[in-house]
Length: 219
Image (cartoon, rainbow, N blue to C red; front, side, top):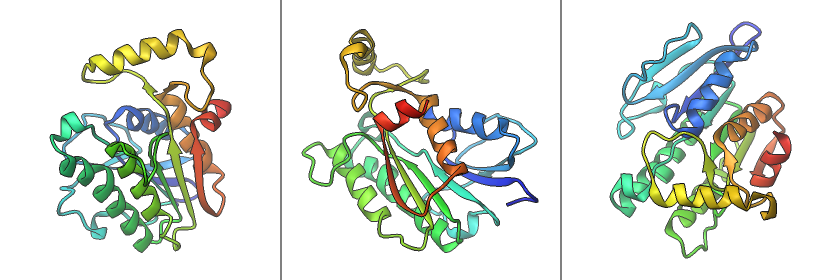
């Protein structure tokens, strides 16, 4: 808390959901400061924004600022960008848990993280299994007052890179959207970001999973 306004911490601010969340946080009159963990300068300038340059492999709790009201984790990569299963797990599991553990040590009362609709520790799909294991470990962090896990289905938004398979999938999901249950319906990046901010403003104690349908209903 800074005065009577909120101080938020975000990781993954240059990603699809992260970009939208940063905009929402900075535009919110109740936000006093946004601290963003970045590997390199984003180029975004705002009087409420502070970018903290870090190396995730050398990242420690000392890199986190004081008096943070909520941590938002929008970290995530793809198998193609990561290059291997181990590299993917490093980002989507190791870095996420590192931020969560350090947030707990810093007594940050809330932790919000983007997972995936198919997250499952027993999944045959490696991506979903990593997300499920990440969620499983987060639930063990009992000293964080409120933990929120968001499970979006296929994400819609303007990505920096072109993905043919994903693009074709989005076209199909949009075309048959009226037939698709909310649990599986494609969702826009800003809808997920709006849900994250909504729950941060009215966080309930405990561990909570916000599924795709709930994010559609909220926005």
